[in-house]
Image: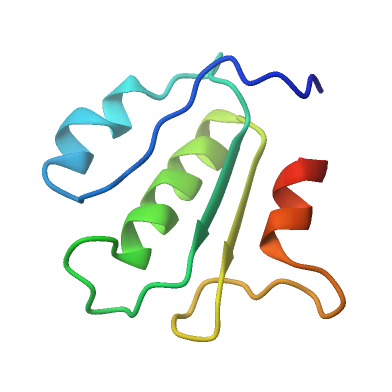
Length: 90
């Protein structure tokens, strides 16, 4: 994989994400790296949004990784590394 991103989308808010962002993801999309350490009830950066995007990418066969912190139920980063390290490797 190239270290130069072809596209970058930042989900700042979940407003209409399912109606606007999800339909834009197709089988030819660039690989997606997702990280959220937001609380489950966070209304601005909800972890559920990262999970929805991840599930859609897996459904379409788009390479993707999703990680969370200790404040939500997303998969934790293995000890000895950080999500930043993983994003750089990705």
